Image 1 (cartoon, chains in turn yellow, purple):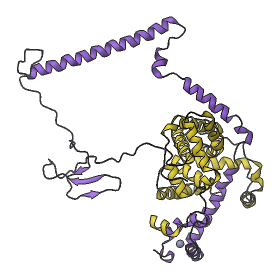
Image 2 (image 1 turned 180 degrees about the vertical axis):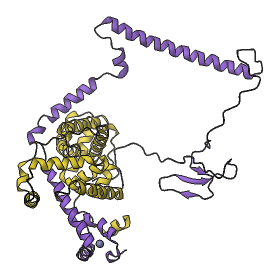
Image 3 (image 1 turned 30 degrees about the vertical axis):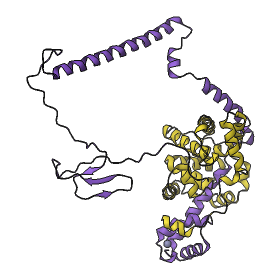
Image 4 (image 1 turned 45 degrees about the vertical axis):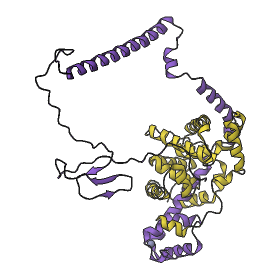
Amino acid sequence: MKLLEKLHLKKPATPPVQSAVPQHEEDETLVARAQRGDAGAYDVLVERYKQRLYATVYHMTSNHEDANDLVQETFIKAYRSLNSFRGNSSFYTWIYRIAVNRTINHLKRRRNRNTYSLDDVDSGIQTDPDFVELMSHVTPRREVGLNELHQRLNEALQKLSENHRAVVVMHDIQGMTHADIAKATNTSEGTVRSRLFYARQQLQGLLSDYV
Amino acid sequence: MKLVTEMKCDEIQFLLDDLARDRLAEPVAKQVRLHLADCTDCRVVHQRGMRLQRLLALKRHEQPVPQYFDGFLNEFHRRLAAADAQPSFWQKFLRTPDMPLVGSWRMGLAGACGVALTMGLLWMGLRSSNDALTASGDPHIGSLVVYAEPPPAPAPLFTLPVETGIASTAPSIDTLAGGLRLASTGAARPEPSQPRYVLDRIPITPASYEVRADF
Ligand SMILES: [Zn+2]
């Protein structure tokens, strides 16, 4: 299947994750300054990436408190390991990987102890075409509340294994490519595709009311 | 290059993600779409997959208010300072608390551990010198127990060759993808009917969060 990927896939026009960072060189400069002991430079990196790391970790844990702790721990761990960062990858790739690894380990420790945060759905969802279509499709059969929908989504995600959940979050929620997910999780693209396939099969069973 | 028209349904389904995200080269995308038009099974899989992805994507709206992150940096500094100020295990153990009695108890325990360690090392040294004397031929010197015959060594449950490797009495040599190798160990094995395996190379990957390429 790897051959298929090589033959059939066109190259992505823009790197999907890194593209959101406008000045890649600035990261390198900031990292170099932070490595020389400039704490202010590291602060800029924290401010730059806190929300993006938070989003991934939150969707993996479905819990704001855990997400906050894990992202804080990630930045502390990265700060302390900064001298070992040699710039073979971008700073964001490096710290993203730390965050994902920490979160997966956290989820493995926290198995069967799931608590969800369900009170933070932004108002934009009401006008999201996918949400509108879903509601029109589902509500004739039964009443579906917004919170119920999110609870069902979170419960279904929490039933996946940690590795399957990570792949679904990165691909289906955050829109990362298989290649980027493979780098972030230190696996092959084939493994990412396979995990996605099985995770979706499980999710389709768990969310059969909606799909 | 395998033509899309020659692909089986599972191979087509493998490409559906890329089709949905416009990541296929146009001629291939066209072929996949033609297959979907003809094949009910693949079309159902595609439609259900798309519905699931749209449903999951709604989770994007589940996020805290922007003000949630206002104090994040201050909290980072507070946690970093707290972590830096945290004493190590031995510092914690030997730290004298307010109660002097407890403090002296801890110091006493640490001292006792030190003495026990020293005694243990001395005993080990004495024992090894006794073994040396026994081996030298005089059983009365330095040993209280003298065996008429040396006690039989317990039969090993299994033996491991010195070299690390997966070795089997099976005659063939197979190379496995994970860096494990099945190799014949020759006719000297006691029970050729029961192959025995020994771990071969374990690829040791340095623990690093870095990857070679950027996202
Ligand atoms: Zn088909």
